Length: 147
Length: 327
Image 1 (tube, rainbow over the protein chains, first blue to last red):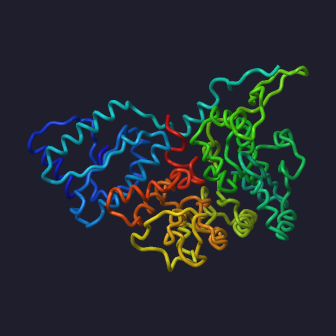
Image 2: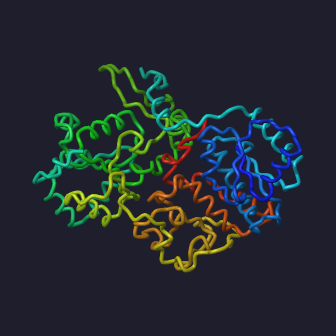
């Protein structure tokens, strides 16, 4: 899942497309107005809905259309990565990178690299509570018999 | 729903506890003299903490015969799931009473672990444990006198509404007496809000907090401090002091008991209706007011939070979007 900022990274992806550059089809792009608009809830929802990796691509620091949205994204990113690893989600599954409108090559490289990383990590599955609850009644509780 | 059961001269009421501490039962006693009004108006048919009724007494009731049952605590064992389902069948209304029934509460934090890890630590590894024979609880144990059984301990805690349908929620750890009394009055008078309502105002705690005037509008936090590491100003917004306070991501209605005792909010009322994941939302709010744009500086501040998930989901982990540790 890729959240791309409207002003830089989405344009960068567009540039990659116009130049007929190829990159793996594994990324599903969602255009957002700013990387600072990417609520941590969106990222968690993506993992919950079956994404194995989430990328947030925004303008380079100092270049944000809204002045400091990308800094907000950067702060959230560092905290969210730590929090996700507490949930057992490898922090490499979340990536924040800066891709400007002219960086078609960087866009392609970033996608390539992310797809490689996520493929190496393998899929994750977030169980909905109904499935987790159904599992509770399977099998027998461990432990030795008391004589 | 059996509204008929409410129209009786003395409607039948149940009160049950699952994975909880007993504080919610205390909250009922906290009604003080108002409890006499309640006792006068209703007929308790099941309340294991206070009255000697058995499960078979509940089984003997007709379906829907209990007008309302208040359940506190989340679902952690097979027995709790069984009784919650039994009470659902026998009750017109089910009210999830307190933070644990509503969103899992602090027992839900153990969803970062699982049954084996919990048993391993609690019965074997904890420094205060003396258990040379390595005995851990089991569902079945054969002793000289026969077979003993314990209900299965689940891998995770489930808020009550993940196991049975819940009609109303009374949030809080524990729910404050004024909200409890208002809810009881609403139920007795039949003047009920739409089914599924949380019986507390739907705005954030900051909205009514008396420290609101000092709440930071822009980035101010240069350092995160824990409550024991600083002298807390009794008037200033906790976030402005660099102390984590879950007020921005928490529902109002508690009467600010913690804030008034000069302690920051830990989120026991859960989120407002517009928020699905209290922890993620708070993370978002907190990161926005960290005063650093340089990556190393940002890391220094965020790394100083000892246990981000533990504090952001203090009460709401079991009801969060991920709910438990991802395998």
